[in-house]
Length: 150
Image (cartoon, rainbow, N blue to C red; front, side, top):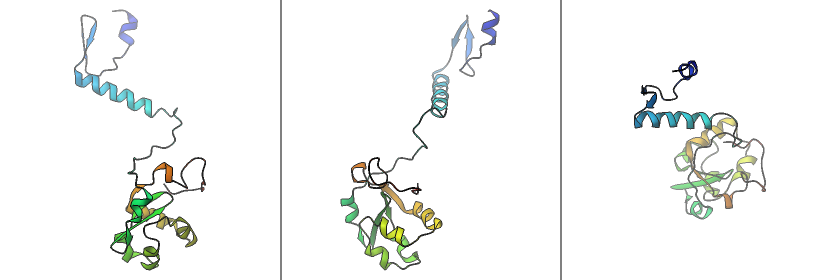
C-alpha cells in the first residue's frame, strides 16, 4: 500500500480490506447510502426552502359536507381543520364557528383579531390542505398574505 492509500478513510465503516479490495455487507452499503443521501439533502445548497410535512389534499366540495355542529370542518389559509371537538372550547362561542362550517373562513378569522396562541391551537386540528388548483393564499401567482401560519 502506498502512503496515499493509508490516508484515505473508507466511507463504509466496519468494512474489511481483503487483498487490497474493500468488501462490505449489504447492510453496510445501505447504511453508507443513507448517510450520503442525508448529507446531500442537508447541505444547504438546495433552494426548496424549509421541509414541509406532506399533507392530505381535501377539496372544497368535501369540506362542504362537514357543515354542522356534530361534524365541523373549516378552511383557513388553504389548510383544512376539523374543529368539531373545539366548538365547545371556543372562547367566542360555537355559533360563529358553525356559521362558517364547511367553507373557507379565513377573512372572518382575520377580522376577529385572533392571537398568536390561536394560530398555534390550529395545528392540533389540521387534517389536510386544499389542492393547488383551489388554493388562494399559498399559491404562486395568486393573492399572497405575509406571515402565513405554517
